[in-house]
Length: 623
Ligand SMILES: Cc1cc2nc3c(=O)[nH]c(=O)nc-3n(C[C@H](O)[C@H](O)[C@H](O)COP(=O)(O)OP(=O)(O)OC[C@H]3O[C@@H](n4cnc5c(N)ncnc54)[C@H](O)[C@@H]3O)c2cc1C
Ligand SMILES: *[C@@H]1O[C@H](CO)[C@@H](O)[C@H](O)[C@H]1NC(C)=O
Ligand SMILES: *[C@@H]1O[C@H](CO)[C@@H](O)[C@H](O)[C@H]1NC(C)=O
Ligand SMILES: *[C@@H]1O[C@H](CO)[C@@H](O)[C@H](O)[C@H]1NC(C)=O
Ligand SMILES: *[C@@H]1O[C@H](CO)[C@@H](O)[C@H](O)[C@H]1NC(C)=O
Ligand SMILES: *[C@@H]1O[C@H](CO)[C@@H](O)[C@H](O)[C@H]1NC(C)=O
Ligand SMILES: *[C@@H]1O[C@H](CO)[C@@H](O)[C@H](O)[C@H]1NC(C)=O
Ligand SMILES: *[C@@H]1O[C@H](CO)[C@@H](O)[C@H](O)[C@H]1NC(C)=O
Ligand SMILES: *[C@@H]1O[C@H](CO)[C@@H](O)[C@H](O)[C@H]1NC(C)=O
Ligand SMILES: *[C@@H]1O[C@H](CO)[C@@H](O)[C@H](O)[C@H]1NC(C)=O
Figure (cartoon, rainbow, N blue to C red):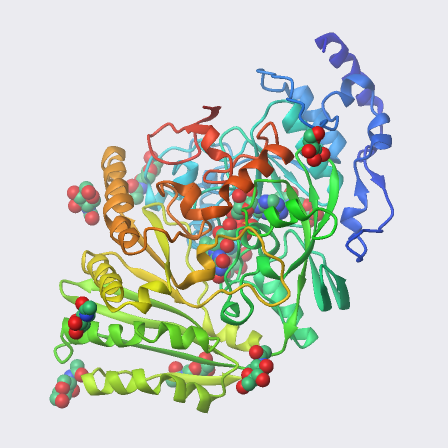
């Protein structure tokens, strides 16, 4: 396109009065059987596009199937960004500023009072979810612009944060952003809450689509579709666990969300699988999905159900966020109200409890994982190293789904009897709640986020490791060795069968065999040099987690709570589904517009990080 024509187009733009004139209000009919949300009826259509001058339109045209975007190499000029803001609805395009710039005297918006507030709230997930670009794992933005009490680089640049973010309030804005990124050859990221453990919601120089404000919810008492009939909830992409749980409580029903309060239930969580305190009974969050509304890489808005597009439905349900399109809403099954006995307790080594006695108590627990998962319960527990030969166990909590207090006490009696026989003092606080919501609210801590000195890794240990005593011993020995070497264990005991009536989906097949999702981490400190951090990471990925993998080489790991450096991530995170997922990626996103680290197709790309660490602060290049 001639540059002169563009400038001419901008002049005509300057006289146009209203913004949003490229969005068109469409009918709310959807083949999902439930009406579109108001935010979904404002769309970019061919007719709406035709209202733009030809040279303006050139930045926002829909893609045709298989067409490769014109390879532009120049960063759009200020004028073009203004044009983009104008078509979005002026003010929706946000030029990214890292939260902690207010802490840097060299920055124009330096403000010590605001800095204090940011610093105090830094580990609180609400702070980052409410920001257009901030993420909860600063490692992946390159640890730039941290609150100045935890200097790593002591500088404040944009690092791996996206450069611009669209504060989305309706679907046309997502379509415009997708088309603009494709045609301007920009990196594109989708950011919802920023919880992702691998930094999949950030990227240097990217245009971000920020879905956090898409908070609509609608209840349907008797949804029919995808072979299901019953209560369902339609959730906007920005809806979080606390929103959904409050809604379900009000309805007298149970929703499937994570344990984490602020996780984006209709975003990366459900798209990556999504385990839940209800998983041992109902499986994954992805297994609850009935329909999705999605903006594809070509900019088109589509409704995806088992009937309309079984391939894409299969891929979206568990194949990972930021890969096949931007989901604007999800309709999911709701489940009946259920009572829960919640139990919290801890025990530790002490002068009276030797390390061997402590581990015998842990072994007695772990041996019972098949029984507990088969009983429909879920447990979140920590085993922490607290000094040389010293350990602490925290049940944080045991979530006794559909168990009265008596039933719960009967379930755990054999283990508790063992602990007593071993002389391990512990005082369980077990309480029955007639409703999921109250048990969840009382049970799970608000996790602290935003550590910049830590890398996580995980494994889905299969039931087979319990069915053979020598395998069990090897598993137990591997975990004990990891913790004894100073790494914490944060693990979940659950089972995750595909529930009756749910179609097969692309969630990691390793989920269907697991009894334990175990997470551990490694740490360094703020002054550790990058080369040494890289060594610490490699030791962690290959030695520490290598010991875990050796006990179950054919199993996998949960992509959403994993090690970004997981070797052979295709097998580990996607298992036997990978080939089909990859083919579908080529069909729906042939130019690779949606890139996220460890996502399907990401092996064709490389981020040239500036510090040699696995972060998103460098250029994204096709390999
Ligand atoms: C404190 C904490 C607690 C957690 N608890 C649980 C838990 O109980 N169970 C569990 O299974 N997981 C849990 N997780 C992991 C969580 O599922 C993942 O971090 C997940 O990626 C979060 O999704 P999000 O949309 O909130 O985050 P984001 O980081 O914003 O997004 C994650 C990924 O999804 C993509 N994405 C987001 N929205 C969309 C969309 N609308 N369309 C397409 N792609 C999208 C992003 O591009 C990115 O690739 C927890 C994580 C943390 C940090
Ligand atoms: C793109 O074209 C191919 C081959 O013609 C077809 O199989 C595929 O379904 C098309 N994809 C979309 C999203 O239309
Ligand atoms: C910080 O936290 C306090 C209380 O927890 C809250 O009132 C305040 O709004 C938060 N500030 C930011 C910027 O999130
Ligand atoms: C962090 O860096 C800033 C800017 O260089 C400096 O003012 C501050 O004292 C440092 N803080 C710490 C804890 O090192
Ligand atoms: C984003 O848009 C919403 C309206 O949808 C508005 O309330 C909010 O203030 C905006 N946020 C920012 C950071 O601009
Ligand atoms: C250890 O056991 C002794 C004797 O039973 C008891 O008096 C003491 O309180 C115990 N100490 C702890 C820390 O439990
Ligand atoms: C709870 O358990 C009872 C049997 O004890 C069973 O009939 C009921 O279906 C279960 N409820 C749920 C929600 O699983
Ligand atoms: C026991 O748990 C209940 C429910 O979480 C809580 O209200 C109560 O304060 C706890 N009691 C003790 C002694 O910790
Ligand atoms: C497993 O470990 C237990 C306890 O250490 C031991 O008694 C048992 O013999 C071991 N079994 C096998 C098959 O190694
Ligand atoms: C920080 O890490 C370095 C290198 O790993 C180490 O030498 C130093 O002791 C650590 N400092 C602290 C306070 O942990």
